[in-house]
Image 1 (spheres, rainbow, N blue to C red):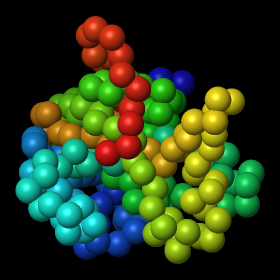
Image 2 (image 1 turned 120 degrees about the vertical axis):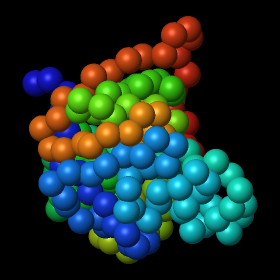
Image 3 (image 1 turned 60 degrees about the horizontal axis):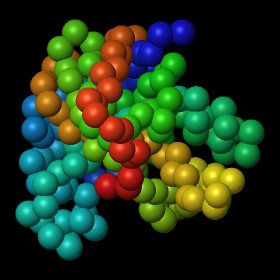
Length: 180
């Protein structure tokens, strides 16, 4: 199956889950038009409290839909948009991509991966035990975060379900995604 967009979401207010839409518009250097996290500087409330002048490296949240089956096996019913992603993907292992990977979304939009979403306690308020379900450990004991990846918008455009995703890996040595 070729990588594609399964669903798109946004919320104009700071809520955990986001509503589904027929399409969203990505704005270069800002994020998802109409979403509470859209902006050049940080929009996540906890980060605004620390330093509102920080650049917004979390303009777009992407999550692979393959995670839903894994969560269901652990007793969690999670659907697209439930854990706050803007774009739900299918057919791409987002977590395995290196930092600075570029994703062409549909005919126009281009985003660059900046890092991993670091799940917070809100995820357990949504469903008890979900935080533990989106965290894991490697054989070496390193923490694995499965709650999606964050990106910045390089080129704006409309993104809709079924849009194709093209992957462009960065040149040079690849750095793994880290929490942002």
